[in-house]
Length: 201
Image 1 (cartoon, rainbow, N blue to C red):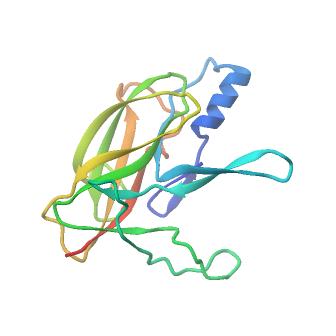
Image 2 (image 1 turned 135 degrees about the vertical axis):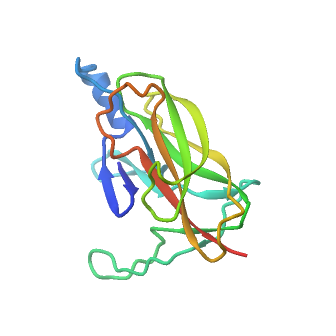
């Protein structure tokens, strides 16, 4: 899996891979906790030529309170690696209004030794695409995440502040960590991600 926070993409072992390894080899005596959040969700499964099956992933979305996906812009105009124009929208920008209640879809995973593990998810509004604890905290939730080979993709209701500025871009983000702050994680680079938004009239 990959998770992005800012301009860097961080590869990491997802919950399905970790579950498979633990099933085959058991837990290491040095195993640590490992929770993550990403703006990817599982899509359809496609067969490969060798008879195996692989999963397609899609970006997570932003919905209104009636669970209708919000309208997007796509400012990404760079070519892909072989020089041809990108025809899909790899980085959608969702159009929101001041004070609007939205449903933020993200995927949460537990690839660590404890299942289920209580986690704290903090949701932020940021003026840039790097989500950190200096951003504007909008909401905190507590979840219990299983390591059951089924990454948890769900929506969180968030109300946008009325003080945001029309025409400006912001990023709705999440930082997730074990509720027990003394627990050690194997990777701290996959604990935050975002969805890009623009405030419209």
